Image 1 (cartoon, rainbow, N blue to C red):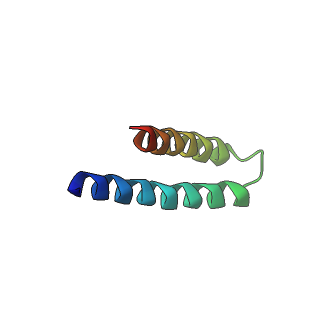
Image 2 (cartoon, one colour):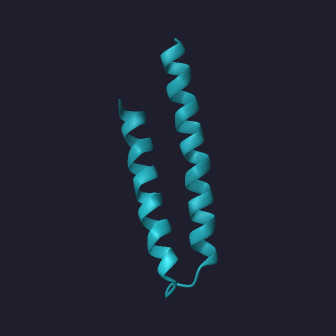
Length: 55
């Protein structure tokens, strides 16, 4: 049960990080090089969260 709670909490924290990255991306112009960095981070967070949900 503790493992389930820890996984749930980690998924929730990833969701918060994902939202922060989405917010950061939305505030940058398409031509801004930082947008690519945020997009890469966002993709990594999404993959990690999906892996946790499917495990």
